[in-house]
Length: 338
Image (cartoon, rainbow, N blue to C red; front, side):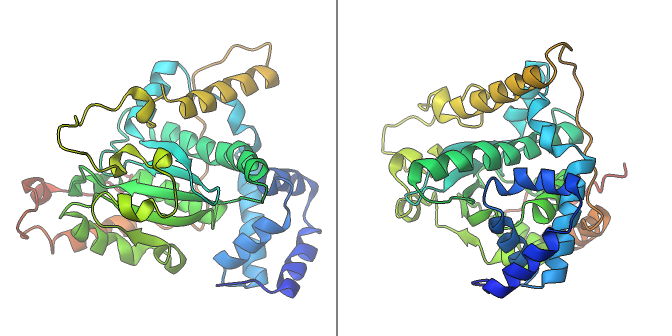
């Protein structure tokens, strides 16, 4: 939906005044000084229906309290080698900012493996980046650009994409459900770049499973997308996989600083150091212990088994297409029960 009517926001605001104190406290970490902003986001996520939006937001706040999300930025993933392995296999990083001030997150969908740690560690890391974005990056961008900035842009790199990537359905389902139910309307646009031939097959499988409001934000660009993306950001903010290479340039010429997925990149160094510092502030006496944060999957989450069944059924239609890898023949989707 477009602009949310003022009277609808006021109704929602009145309902939120009645919630219990623990929910009001965690709501402060959600709105970051702009209490009407999440009301608008949750209303848009529920097509302007006040009661549905209210239930969705209250469920989100309860989820935050039950899983101690307010303190998740004080729970580092240790040892460092474990966190480095997560960063090397869950490819996400901050490449810069758009001309309007939106943070730009680059995600290496095609080369993601998410196979170096348990699901709980990947979920913990994902939520920590969400919370760091909302509590640190966005407030800083708001101050820098002199206007309230509450959303980001995501660029999804499909380089190296294989149909076997769909075997990560359990983790993908958990993360997408958490984002959809607890961080709705936080992305302005999803740009898809470097889409190989096989992307069309994957897209036909995944597209019907997406919310309409999400599908409307997805923009598939031609090639690396450089020309289109330079209309909304400067070259310095362009992810390295979106940059056209001139003749004679090396594919390995980018330094570690350009590899914004790596723990060595300044963004991830800042995130990790921030979390470790918060941990010392909260618990100065106790040593940091290794352990993942177990986050409860919201009740309204889409069933992974149903998605897996749909994917396997649809993939059968593509296994005889020219150009599809032989590995598709024996591909099975892990619904999390094995």
